[in-house]
Length: 268
Ligand SMILES: [Zn+2]
Image (tube, rainbow, N blue to C red):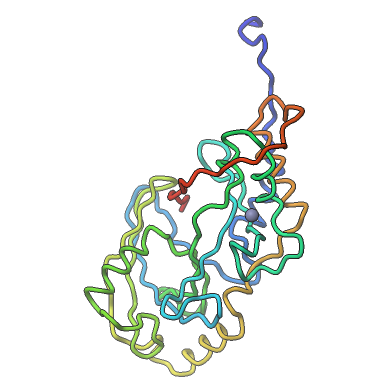
């Protein structure tokens, strides 16, 4: 038995570090904000009805109401996400105010390992939006990382049902019905229906309150500051996956060209 284990080196699963970052940085959003998710019910298909609220932010292109957010993602056990850290490189996230840039992006440039990009590269943006959940309107505006795979669906459906209209318009916009099926990396979202045109709320006071809230809390300003400590923890975990036997001496000299492939999968 012992000889089977010869050369095997036990490596402790660092649940504490993952837990720490997983909790505070999973969404990257300050805890005072409500974050919406379409909850999985096993393999069963779930439908939700939501309404976009216009975003009052110079970083959101007119007519899109979706803020692209770039994050570094590190997959851990069984393809689940271990860490996500907002990229503080202003080239990626224009709304981030950072004096020293992003230490994770810097690590990509530093290590010569051909797979370094897999761990350090900033991934295709997640899209953040304000919504109202029609089943829980009393919650008021919530933030939703709108699945980017749904953007195409949204375009197709909008073209068919309300071409040229503003679907987030407070008075003449559209509710959207979204379905979710599957779990984990097999999760699929579809847009099932558009419902409208109709007002954001039939109650003018609610509508005024929600719009004021979103105006007072610009969508680019809802993020937790990213500490150098969190970035360094990400880098050290990524390095331990990249170099399971330890970072060799002498690496860190030549730059790596990042592959153009992008990660399309989302864990939710
Ligand atoms: Zn970065």
